[in-house]
Structures are given as C-alpha cells and as structure tokens.
Length: 147
Length: 147
Length: 147
Length: 147
Image (cartoon, rainbow over all chains, first blue to last red; front, top):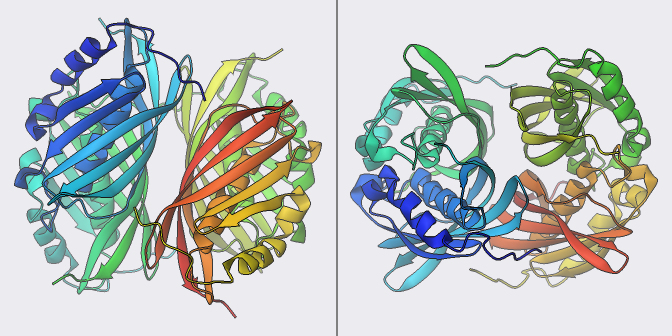
C-alpha cells in the first residue's frame, strides 16, 4: 500500500498543538508519546476516574484512545491547512482493560484525497506484561481548516 | 423480533447499582435517565473537560455514552446472576457534538442466550433544538457473575 | 434528521438502470422491488447456488443485499450526474438466512455533501413468517460521474 | 497475543469439506488456496457474473471472500465437533475491485472459548500488480456441531 511521506514538514508540531487543545486528553492525563508519518501513539495512565463497574478502564475510554491515535495518525499525512473529522470507527474488545497504563497505537492503512482508513491497537501494561485489549478499524475525513 | 420482558424483576436496581459503580460516569457527570426492558438512556452535560480540539464533545465520549446505553439496555434483559461484556461496537459520527447536553439512547435489537445486538443514537441538545450526532450498532455478551 | 427529497426527479430510472448493469444481481436473480427518496428494497430468491455449508443463504450474500439496498437508498438522494461508492459497512447476523426469499431494506440516516450514512435490515420469509436475519450500518460516498 | 496451535489435528480436511459444501463458492469459482492454524486464503477469479455497475467485482463479493477467509481461519482453531457462526463483520473498501483474480486472506487476532476475532485483507491481482482493495475486522462464534 501507499506509504506516503507527510506533505506538511511541520506535521508533528501541528499534531501536538491539536492534541494539547483537547480538554479530554488533559482530563485523562493522556500523552502523545509518538508521532510519525502515518502513525501515532497515545499513552494513558490508569485511574479510578475512568473505570467501569469492575474497576477496569471503561471500554469507552479504550475506544477514545484508539480513535484518537487513528485520528492523529491520519492527520500526520494531511496538508498544513486542513482539519480532520472522524467518520466512523469499529472496535473489538479482546480482554478487560486491566493494568497500570495503556497504549493506543494508530496506523494509516490507506490515505486518499478525502478519506483515510486506519487501524489501531490498544495494549494494557500490567506488572511488566502487555496484553492486547482492543483492535479498531476506522475512517477519517480531511476538511479545509475551520477558521 | 423478540421483544422479551426482563427475566429479572429487579433489573432496574441491578442496573442503577452497576452504573453507580462506574467511576467514569461520575467523572463525566452522566446520569442514567431511563431504564426499561431492552432500553436505556444516559444524559451527559457539556463540559470543557471532555472536549476535542474545537471545543465540542470528543468523539470518544460520544462513543462512551452510546456504548454504555447499549450495555445497560442489554443488561436489562439478562438474568439476575449475570455480568455483561462489550464484544464490539461500530459508530458513525453524523454531526459535531455541539450542545449543552447529550442523550444516548440504547435499544436491544435481538437478545439470544449468549449475545445481544443493540443500536444506539446520541442526540445533542442546543438552545432547544436537538440533532442526531451519532448512531451505533454493537454486540454484548452475557457471562456468569464474577465474584 | 434531514429528510430531503431527491434532487434528481429521474432518480428511479437512474437507479433501475444502475441496478440492471450489475451482473451480480442478475446472477442472484435479485430484484429491486422498491425505490423511494432515501429508501430501496431488494428481493432475493433462495437458491442452492448461494448457500453456505448448512444449506442456508451465505452471510456474504445477505451482506450483499444489505449493502446494495443501502447504496441505492443513498444514490436516490444524489444529483443526476453522480456515482456512488461504498466506503464501509458493518453487519450483525441475527439468525440463519433460512427461507424461500429475502428482502433487504436500506434507508438513509443522514446525507451530506460527500458522505451518506445508511442502515439496512435483511428479512427472511419462510412459510409465511418473517424473521430479521441481519442489520447493517454503512457509509457511502458520492463522486462525480465516471465517463 | 495467543498463537495457539489447532486443537483438531484434522482441521484442514474438516475445513476443506465445509468449504466444498458451500454452494456459493462453487458458483463463484472460488478456491481455498491455503489453510493453516489461524489462517485461511481464498482465491476468486474475475467474471462478469459477479460485477457491479462499472464492471468491477461487486463489494458484496469482496465482502464474501473476506468474511469466508475469516470464518475458516477461526474454524481452524476450533475443536473437531464444532460449527462456526458469523456474528458480525466490518469492512472498509479501499480501491475498486479491478483485476483478473482476487485473494482474501483471513487471520485470527484472538480466539477465546466462545468467540474469535479475525481480520482479513482482500487483494486484487491485475497484470502482475497487486492492490489492497479491502480490510475487514470480524467476530465469529463456536457452537456445538449441528446434527
């Protein structure tokens, strides 16, 4: 498949600035640990504030991390004067999100003029072991930058 | 389609207690506004703490509300001594999640012995108008109650 | 939700002509039984030529009927000089596709300038009873007409 | 992730016999070109009998090949006395299915006692070049063998 370079040489600062404007990432204490052309990784620490009924991380937050990693992976390959919208995503939950920290890794599968298709994995790290807790497949859309 | 009643007469208190144990719902200030056999509604107020880069509610939180509404809709039709697991979900985002409050409505489409298939809508309320912001289709699984 | 009329008054003949050019629909013996703005219904007779290992209709053909009903539902709301592409779809299988005939009903949930989001149901008819065998949620894209 | 061996030493003949009973695969002229524990590949030749309106292979048939490759990949890891049911699938279409032949490759991501999660790719081969035309993520379920 196409493995294009990033058309915007400043893609990383553009993405880090967008990430920093997401109130939710601050609330979650999430960090953008890596950005590369067509790839992004987000790390999330465990906290009771984001749990479901059994004390594990809520599926919705697992989904959030996966979705956001896909979004920034796609955004890395878009022009400087663009915005990105989530069109849809699909996630399978493979194991309970048990652990001290979680990493969502998003990758672009294919990018076109309007749409990008991405996949993501979310890994749980617990006492030095890692477990794949979810896989996502998603569609993103480029739109001209909103004022 | 099967429109079964709830096999557990105490389904509502079981569901409200499960909802109350979700740390995330507390963090979001979300409320379970309605539970009925095969249906659940969750309301979420807007706050800066859950935004994406343009100040709207983050897609991941829209997804969380939809997913949770599906989960409790399915859980209403399950036996007293059961737990519920999310298998997978798929969400289409139809409009930016702009508004003062948001309501996720989950409904069971079909429930079997092991799996339930649900759909959800998420509506944004803004200055007295409502807009459909997302639709979800999801699969849940019953498991025997964890100790 | 937007319930727009069809911008192309000749949408039905445009859709019927597109359906007639699909070699697969001929092979399946499928018929376009209804087209209306934002809606399409396709009927499929049972035959051994389209079965899976237990003699029921193959999931892939159930998916085909659902996907095609969504595509034509969306295409009914598009301009005369347009083509339609499937972006993605997601289908849940609810019951074995057992019956003499099957009807896929596609409906537009939301149509925008570029993308349309649709849902579909596939019903099996067997000895006068009908059963919902699958539900789909899908995304379609308009593109300018190919020469 | 778990990369289990096949619990049934005769998995390949069990799978080939199941494939041979699918009337649809015969109609399509499709072949099961490879089976290994957790993996299956299906090859499909082009024919006018399976086209959409522009003469390419219909999205529903692309989906069929992907879904079937996932199903047999999962079935390879199941016990001898089991059947397999498709729960749901999600497919993104990346390019028109143009070519002389098509290969669907299904792989198990995770297998549990009841459910298996798989992914598939569908490649088009045209004049010696190959193009990724679709990616799928799907859920399958084991059930005790039907009589």
